[in-house]
Image (cartoon, rainbow, N blue to C red; front, side, top):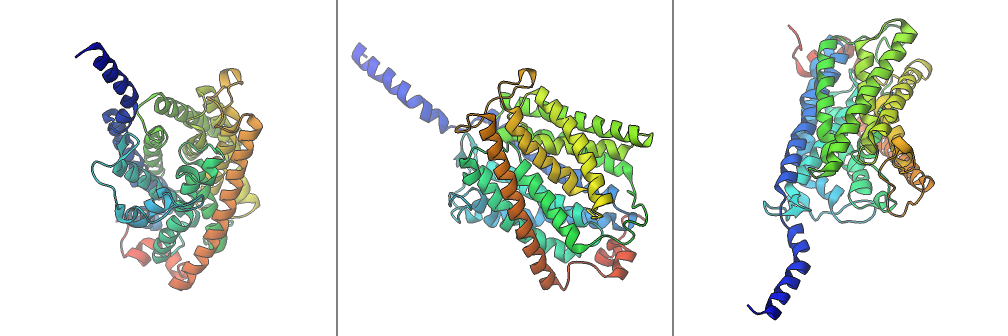
Length: 430
């Protein structure tokens, strides 16, 4: 080979190496997202199921476990059929299209970036599963099982998929540079707002406001909470879609925020009531996790610490305000923990992503948002639009489901007997 030919070969390699590499599967990234997918599904089954199951009364524990299990099944099928296409199909600024229905065009060799597209689809499926499962906490112990399934099915396609497209599918919020690393908007605000609307529409449980409705099994709840904490590493760390420093830092700040939220809530209770409670500690942990979620890829450990502390304080007082002042029976505190936490974390992402905050500095603003004010404004627009759309759509869906099922709520007799027997003819305990 002469020198001239060698030069041409070298130039060809230089100019073609990048696109060739971009089309190759990355084994390390694929292995990490495979692991993260399992971790996120683990958050719902068994994590959230046990967390919620322990918080309800003994006569309703099986109904909550069954709802989580059934939602995982039905949402998985809907996501494969059409949900993934609506969320990640090209479409327009507001909704995807039908180009990927039934996973059309997605085979074993099809890539999204440097991981299999089938892996991206199932990783995102686990997010679609946990979001309507979270909403269960707003109407626990009083909604018909048929209504739960029908509501969850419609909601994941009408509310979750479009908002997922807005943020992660190349939609209008993505164009504005809105930061939502792992689901503060897509998961927590949507679930929290939907749970609040459902709680208001169904009304409170029997005995709410006149007697303390206590968890029946805190051991189960703490076990589930511990699973959520571990699973959240896949939730936030996996959202980097790579085995790299972004994933590592997301896991680090997630852990710090969870710890700070747990300790903050625990110490507030200790000061106010004289004793720290296990329920307070695990609720604060979930608040810290939900609040750091949208910001986890953009902030430093110092920012994660502050966000966790803020989550513990603000979500604590939001929970008390919703229950004791507004008298809304959001049974398992979905809105004040996940909804308020998601709002807080989304707004904090616009502040603590700044590179000018010393030890609290993050990793910069999105392209087109050159100042903290611009990034914060984008975050605020995302929050307001998500709340408005979710609230209106959820209200309409619940009204429709109520007409289709002869009412959303179980009868007074069935509620008194418990949903385990009245709905499934089984008992959680013998």
